[in-house]
Amino acid sequence: MSADALLSRLDAVRQVGAGRWRARCPAHNGKNRDVLSVGESPDGVVLVKCFHGCSAEEVVGAVGLELTDVFPRLDRDKHAAGVGRTLRKYDHDEANHAHLRSFRMPRVDWPALLAVCERDLLLVKIILTRIDRREPIDDVDAGACQAAATRVFTLIQKARHG
Image (tube, rainbow, N blue to C red):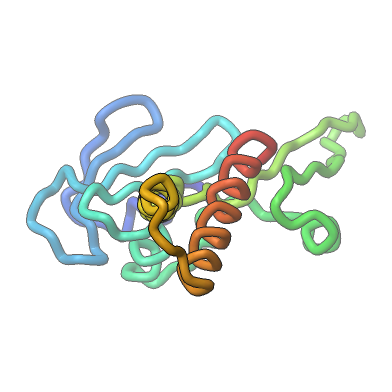
């Protein structure tokens, strides 16, 4: 499905560039017609960003669609075996030539993950400051610090390796 299916259900849509539009966000019923950005990548992935903070799922849900409605169709058998990775399948065109198409999973909500990371790093900083001052650290604080450090490490690994 292309961006057209989503754009046809939005209000105050205006094109701002090749494959890029702005509109009112249906998820929070805002008055600003520039708060929602919609784009379409060359491989057909529809990009949705509300600058008010609504998630892509909230935006498409507000117009009666699901996230799967705005992403290229996946080969379901390969999808089950490869969740989280770029999936590839061979298709044959009319001339019986094989070509490779890439399908991408929905984008990661990096701003939300970075906010969690920021909170976790603040917790680690507080604990390290207490250690530096030779203040006692109880088991609850130590466990919370360990969990926060693990989340930050996992986020860094995900950012590096996808």
